[in-house]
Length: 580
Image (cartoon, rainbow, N blue to C red; front, side, top):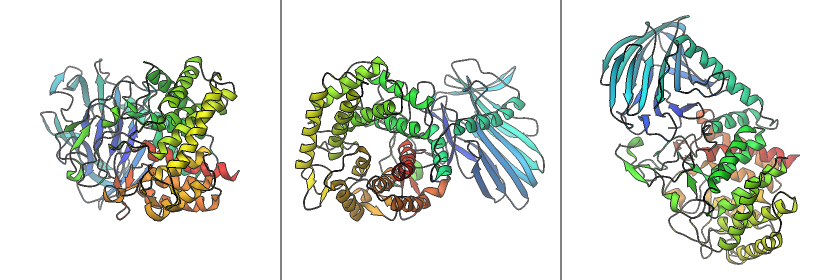
C-alpha cells in the first residue's frame, strides 16, 4: 500500500495505485461509504486507466502542488496521466469532479479503462438521460465524461470498460462526476480539463503562503501539502486519515477506521500548520474544536465525526480486506474511551495560538478555563492513554498531558488571555501532578519513565514530552536512552514494549525521536537522524502510512496518516527552532 498516491479536494480523497487504478474513493465526503474499494477487495470497485502492454512508470506530484503526474513507459511508447480532484475559481465545487488527462508523449500506448463503482451507498441504476448517461448510486447522481476518442467496449450493470490509444501529441480527458442530493452539472469536457491546471494553480498558491525557510524545506512543503488533504473544508475538522480498515500487520485484525476527527490529531495539526505559516486552516480547525467540545459543556470526547457528531459504533464490513487482513472495521471503539492527554493537547494549542499573536474569543477562553478545571477534577483517573488501549491504567503520558494542560492554563492566565481567578489553584495542582509522576512513574531500575506505574514497559510517546518543557533532572534524557535501547530499529521506532509482535514501527514515534534529540540539545544528531529517516519514508514521495514494516519497508495502516505527516512537520521544524 506504500505505492498509493493521493489526490483530494478538501472534501474527499482518492488513492491511485502505481498501475493507474483508483482503488479507494469515498464521495461526496471522505467519511462516506466508498465508491471504489479495491484496496479492500481485489474484485471491488475501481476506476483504472492501465496500459494493455507491460509497463513501468515515473511518477511525481507537480512542484508545490497535489496534482499528480504519471508517465507510463511501454515498448511501444510513452503517455502521461495527470490527475486531480478539481476545484473551481471560487474554491470547492458544488459537485465532486475526478478528472484524469491522458497525453501522448511518444509512440503509441493502448489503455484499458475500467469504471466500476460499488453499491455501498445504495443500488446502482443506469439511465440514459437526455443530457447524459447517468448512474444513480443510492442518493448520489453520477456520470462518466469522455470524448469520442474513448471507445466503449462494454457497458452493463454500472460497469464500463473502454479503450483509448494515445499517440505523440494526443490528449483526452476523462472524468467521473458525483453530486449528492442536488442537481448534477454537466460541464464541457474542455472546462473539466482546464480545471486540472486551475487546481494546480490553487495548490501552488496555498504552498506559497508557507513561511518555513529552514532545513528540509522541500520535504516540509510536500508534507504540509499531504496534511492538507485531511482538512475537511465543510466544517474545519481534520480527519486522522483518508482510509478505513488497512492493516497494522498483514493478516492481522487491527484494521481500524480513521476517517474521523481525533481531538489529539486536530490539536497537533493546528500547531503544525500555524508553525508552517498557514493561517486559514488552523483557525478554522481551532474554531471547530471550540464549537464541538463546547457544544454540550461536558468533558471532551476522544474523537468526533467530521461534522462534530458522535462516531458510530464499530462494526465489521463484509469484504476480504487488504491482502486478506480482516475484519475491516467501520466506526471506532475509541468513541467511548477516556484520554486525559487531550487536555494538554488543547491547552498547548491555545497557548501557541496566543503566543503567535492571535486572539482567543470569549467562547474559546471560557472553554479553556472549564477544561483546566476539569483537569483538576480528573487527572487522578485511569484512562486508555494516547494509544487507546483497552487496558485502563495511569498512563505516564496522560499524566504529563494533565501537567501540560495546567501549566499552559497558568501561562495563558498570566498573559491575560483567559480568566485568571483560578490561576493559583491550577499552579498548585500542576505541581502535585508533577510530584505524582516522579514518585509513581519513574523506574530506578530502568532509569526511565515507564508506560505506567507498576510496570517496566516503555512508551515511545514519552519522546514527545521533550517539546513541552517537562525535562528536569535529565529524566527525559535518560528515558530517551532506554527507549532507544528497546524500541528502536534503525531510524524507526515501535510504539511501546511488545508492539513489535503486533504491528510495524510507528512513523510518528520515529519523528518524535528526532525531536527528542533536537529539544535536548543535540541538533546536529537530530538532523542526521532525520536524513536517515527519510530513507524508509521516501518510498511514496510524501504520502505517509501510519506504520512501516522495518524488515521489508512496506507501509502499514491507514493513509495518508495525519499523525505521521504532522509529526514529520514538527520534527523538521524542531531542527530550525533549536538551532536558532
